Image (tube, rainbow, N blue to C red; front, side, top):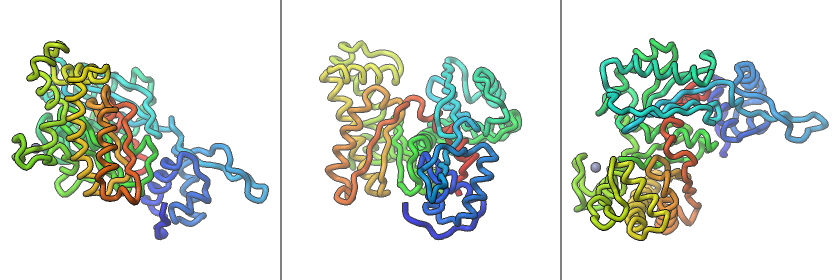
Length: 391
Ligand SMILES: [Zn+2]
């Protein structure tokens, strides 16, 4: 990490210290001063407060300096918790994470016939929150907040689908804690950034493969949102000048070829494949059946997913070039079963074509919990806002 100019010891410094401890895992006060550019007295003061607040603790020692052991610092996982709700196509996924992003509780509630955009949505989400946190026996005083994420949600402004921003204030009033609203792809990227201990000096991106395709961008430790909170619409990167029309107004959008919806539609239209794999049901059901067949060696299913992966890889390479991304995670339900097919294609494309390939390798990783990534990310967003708010 490059040494920064010495910042003043204000609230931003506390966030910086927490974030450097998070990405380091364990670190000494001396190293912390070196990496943050803060003075030793400032570090001592901030660390003292963080220990008193239960955010950081001392652990082990890193050898000794003139006979005096140097204590290491680490984030205290169970000090506080964040709750994340992901409003998906057919289910509400509820997750609780500790301060390191580790999952301490999870519950999936089917949304059959339950319209999440109904009139009393705030009341129902509040009930769900209480049931979930009571069931986990999490002390209310240690819950830092709730974040709700959905494919169409954008923080602070209207979006298609249930208007979560409209219920945010009411829900915060009912629960007495901060409530955040975020896009699912953005939240998933932030969650991967937090729990993978990615350094804030890294340009980090997450590609969220679901019924649509989105990207989350984390620059300088903070989500990049753009001018109108619309950043990350990777699904509408055009990969064909004359390609399939897209409802967005563009042609050839990668989402029209590589999303779970596009793959399921192509599979259903292929009489041979649809008959052989007995494809029926919703988009996620059809897609998962194709993905399972692909990893089990069905050549038709493999070819279909491999082509989708190849197309996604072209868009991913353009994004990496445009933003000089250093580390990329593939996540979302679309990579839950056949993630290796996508990872292979994206790695191959980046190794062949990315501009910076002669200077460095772009790390491409697969999410460890792709189906829950959006809800985990939502909960991580709460944790970040609480202990290391991005300036
Ligand atoms: Zn489009």
